[in-house]
Image 1 (spheres, rainbow, N blue to C red):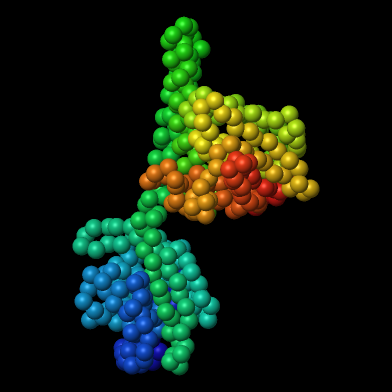
Image 2 (image 1 turned 90 degrees about the vertical axis):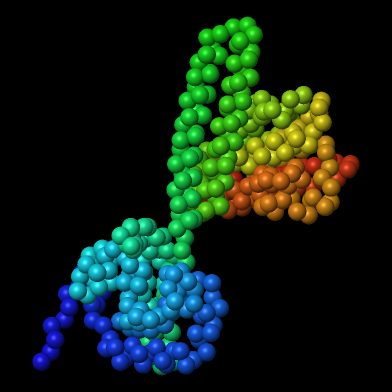
Length: 382
């Protein structure tokens, strides 16, 4: 008499007999593979074609705070990890309607069909009466070297990274709003006062504006590094952009006693690019040039046409030592002290990854230092 199949809302509910699971476990453990998996720092599960555990590496048991497989053979990943949905149906992990959205189940089913897959899995886990959230990046790879249809299922816990990005978004949203509100209030007071107070409020307004600009720069850099940044091309005039940046950075604290000049022979070009991102690149060039310029000195910024591309230049009279030149675009390198060094790296990151361009420089005792960014005249939308 044929047993009635277990109901399922997604993946097959049927399980392998215990003797088949034990046979697969012995087969796998007799191969060289377990020693290799035990050397891996991430949790790894070996699953059969019914999504059941036949082997777990050392990192898995450390992650779960268990001594070993003991009674875990035959469990599915959600059951092993105490997913809140894993025991809601007789079929277990993978058989509820919620499992349709589970990246882990989807990746494993893909592997069973012979296709490797990497997915995100956001799991609610209930253990000891407490519910916790897990953000996992999982990879399922078919493994048929032993003559059995197995899946190597690797888990990377990205919960900390996800939580950090979430907190960063909240932080930037709140602090930009607060700094923006403070700037608006000081601007209003500045317009309504005269004399010495007017001057002092002007200094405060300049400081707050620079603060907002620095916060925005960090927000853009983090988005670029996490590949969340999307360029938004639009019409830009090179002369208007350079004039605006020169006016903005003339008020920067680093510009005190120094000047920024846009030469008359700088070309006025029409281009299509992301003005905000290009402004960040050029702004970093200007800040670095101002910092390298002695009091009374001058920084020059100009633009030239290069056929279908456009090149922006920023020059100062200083010379960068050779030792620093060789490291200047490294992410964590800075000649200015610890916890610096993101400025030149961000130029490279934004220009190359998001503006379709490149950044380079020349620096000599005789000619000073010139940074330039080379970008297409027309940036196509991603």
